[in-house]
Image 1 (tube, rainbow, N blue to C red):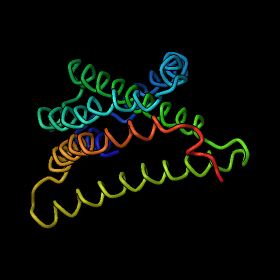
Image 2 (tube, one colour):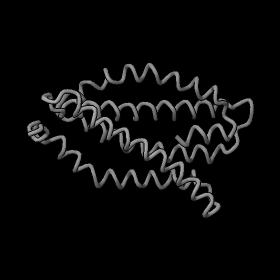
Image 3 (cartoon, rainbow, N blue to C red):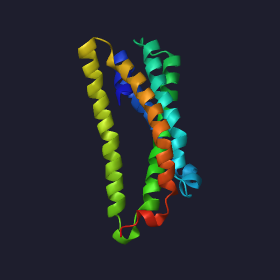
Image 4 (spheres, rainbow, N blue to C red):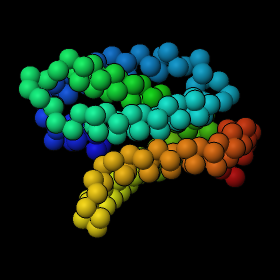
Length: 189
């Protein structure tokens, strides 16, 4: 959320950013099909675990990229376009892979006796989890800037990457246990 705003503030044309994001659409269409052999099996959350650390590393990479290119001259240099393109595509791939894996897990464990209600509930909780984090990061970056005078973007890039690694270490065993539960454990009694 913060990266595209930072790029625009630095002088990267928003039209170019929108054009780069057009390349993600075909990936988002093909990725579920490409991942289906992993997500349709007994352990769809394994895809989440495989994509989690690369996604955290991309957070650091975005911060480093913004630090190296704090002001983007016009016309925009090719290396900046290449960097933004690569980061945007990689972020799109890992984010979409995680989303597809979550949805596959929810579809796997949803109790068919209550129709789509279970799936809708799980998806809603998942979406709320994603949305509050974005809002929190935007507010936290502003708070850090006001309270300390330090650019909150860089602080949040580092903090979120570290948080992601710690979360991964703490919750990987829990996610593995959840996906190993028998389907009967997820059924409404």
